[in-house]
Amino acid sequence: MHGLIVLVLVESRSAALLPRPVGLSWLLLTITFTCTAMGCIQSIACNKSRIKRENIVVYDLSATIDHCPTVIEENSPIVLRYKTPYFKASARIVMPPIPRNETWVVGWIQACTQMEFYNTYGDVGMSSWELPQLREGLVRAISDSDGVSYPWYGNTTETVTIVGPTSKPSRFIVSMNDNFYPSVTWAVPVSESNTPLLTNIKRDQSFTTWLVALNTTSREKILLHTIKWRMRVDIAVDPSLPLGSRARLVGRVHQDQPRVLTRMEPIPPNAMGRPNANDAQVLMWRPRRGPPLVVIPPK
Image (cartoon, rainbow, N blue to C red; front, side, top):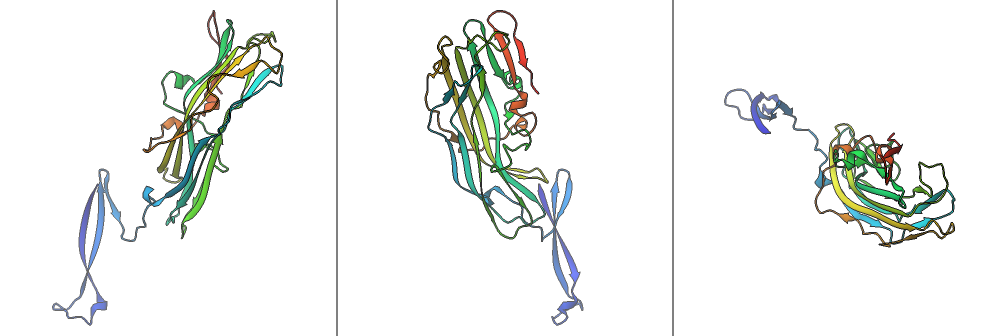
């Protein structure tokens, strides 16, 4: 980008009281043109400043996973349920005055970057929830939006909208939380038998969470923070035991705490729109012998 300054002399009748050797008074008017690869765009002197990263203040940034174990529920003869601790993120924001008729949304965007979710049924086989595009390396991330508020994780506490122009700074808090609370069948999911055969549940899933300011008109994104976190679950099951005493946690009891990166990580395109992880995932049955079978296709 290059700047071109044009100097223009303009007659001034208000300067009549000043000495004027040539009978007219002139004022010097400076007009600046901004030249880009696409051409020249006039820059008006009174053009109001844009919102920039250095003008947005983020403080009290917090990213944690509750320091408690995954809870196993054996209340149903059909399914086992487990509830992991919560990932929680929050931040206080001070947004500068918005001088134009612009709308800015500040909040959390989250994407799944890795998923392994296997339910083993002895020597019969295993079921697995999979994200095919992610598994095959076709994309680097899948949106973890609520499926309505793309690209945002949600639209209640997760985002705040500021409609300009505003004359003073806006102060607010954005927060989010996430955990797993799935159901896993005791019996083989493609069998008509209700005999419990489940022997192990193993889940390992990674996420990237961004704190972002987004101009809804221009789609300009300002990345404020990047957080990485991971949730792992390992449950051993003895299906021969009575309901209520079959499952137990093995391996780690507490999760690693999230990492707030010291550098900004760009948001992959797939993290910004459809499909989200819930719609893109597929439930597969992978028998010990024979070809795999799609149990629940992607939406």
